[in-house]
Image (tube, rainbow, N blue to C red; front, side):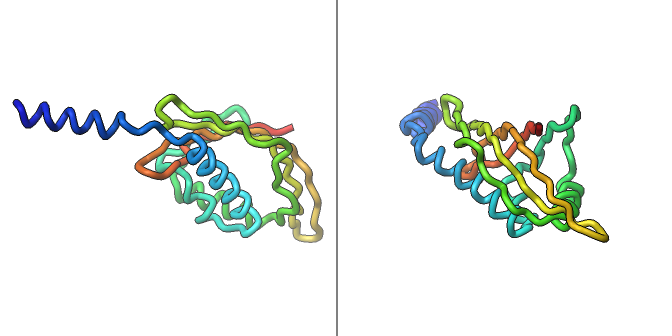
Length: 153
């Protein structure tokens, strides 16, 4: 019984002794948002999807979708292949908040996206204001995107 009690004491002191560094965690979420921007301009699907959890949920256009990674990869690649990003910029600074234990976080994002859509005969320019909530879970030492709820004007 004593070894079990010692183990539980050590475990609780390790798990509970360190307060989360919210500025460090906030910087990590900002880095993920910056990486998303880079992935869009580079059309790098692997970079974009590197932050996705294995069971990423998307809520958009009145539908909840849990898509297999390969189907999602194909869909994103088709999107990236059909456009050129001219602007993918925050309209206001993202609002980031954390759970008390800093294992869950959300970012509320407002972004203006200007892109050129390639058509067979011409290129059309489109400007859209998007807003979304990205929900992240800390798995080990990494933040993973677990859910994205998106809308646009």
